[in-house]
Image (tube, rainbow, N blue to C red; front, top):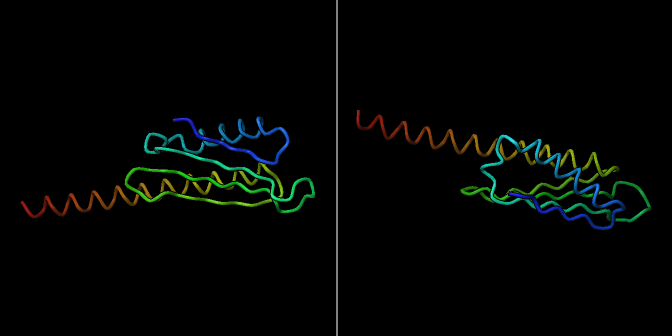
Length: 115
């Protein structure tokens, strides 16, 4: 599955998309097979004025879970992308872990009824 990465209002947007794709691949490597779709929107809200105006929105679709949406804003594009991807990866791993433990507990409870 290839992520959809959209960069608007940024210079060198191809480099930014490549950077985001590499970071996503690294951060989500362990859970990539569970993810159905990834969309990343990277924007510069104020243009070249500067300030806390770089925004990264990540939407992940995982079967059996609600869509995961993470938004980060910051001064630099790379730091904003890194924080958003870190939060998204942490959230996916946490939700998948909870789903597995819930499923395991439910299965164990069903088996104990037959013992």
